[in-house]
Amino acid sequence: MIQDTALTFPQLASYIFDTGNHSLRVEHYAEMMHLKPVYDDQSPHDCGGKCHKFEWPVMRGLAIPANAEESTEVMSSKILHNRYQKHHIIWHSLEDGGFTLGNEDDIAVSTIDIIDSMRSLDGCGQHNRTVLSPFTDLPNKFKGNEKQAWYIEKILTEMMSIDGPRGSYINFFAYPQGRLSERFMKEGYFDAIYARMADAFRIVWEKGSGVPGTANR
Image (cartoon, rainbow, N blue to C red; front, side, top):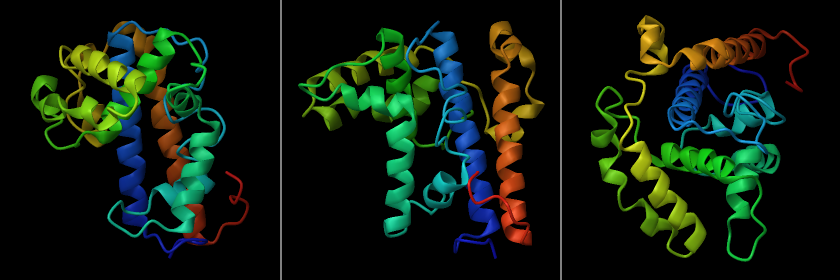
């Protein structure tokens, strides 16, 4: 049993791999679209900055299965993550009447995050036109907010023209490095995501084995 939570190791492991996979895809799309955010300096995506997804106060709530009843613990973790992660702050700044933070590239990365978070992970090995095609009606989900709907439609169209990294993060290590750009590898996104995942597994192991001192990670 993992300390401080009813979650099991398989549930937490699944969350760690899903989060690493999501981070990899967001960084991959941002790189392929030549985006250079200026406000959002929390890199790699969801792995850097305060209250990133591998910090225990966030992980312990967000790892609870999506089909479970949303508890106080889930909401607390969501609030922490959304309050301090800049891509969420940027996205919410697009709400009608609000002051938009960041430049166009900041907004684009935040939009990639929203799209990828809402898409199914099934079919990751296929071309992204196939994977993303069921989401062409996604702008309609944001029709109450003209700015958000406009960016969703614009960025989704661009993403559908790009090949994403095939396979899941767990078997991505067997991938030829040529699948990613030279800059992606040189700037260490891949290694940084892997390091955060390894750190998250260490936290889970310590929680499960009764090793103290991880409560604030």
